[in-house]
Length: 166
Image (tube, rainbow, N blue to C red; front, side, top):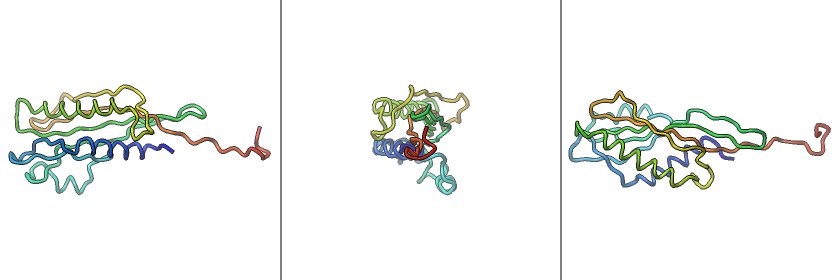
């Protein structure tokens, strides 16, 4: 059975492996961080201990895989789920901090678009859509990539030999 939870697990695995060597700046000029992938939300304990004012262990950069909605298909058809990847980057370079965000988003967009079948089971259901909200911090940037994947649906249980079969 292909469930929404399995899609987020497969997305996390795919992105973690793909971005394993990808690093972006933090507030510590001598250190970069790899991209941390979260599912649904940043855990509260991470928010408390990995704040951006902690020069050694910043939250940035990150991607949050968030499920938004889903819909079943017609009888004997699967459904689809919709979600969003939320990107967060930080850069001290005031004039060009947006470049890190767009570069990371494009990296991920191309990977998902070229993969099309996530984990060998989940088909990308529609084109990816991305946006960068207009309101941004000076050095903290956020962007979004909206996605949709096809998911399975259980077959109805039928008592083929019983009185209820028509």
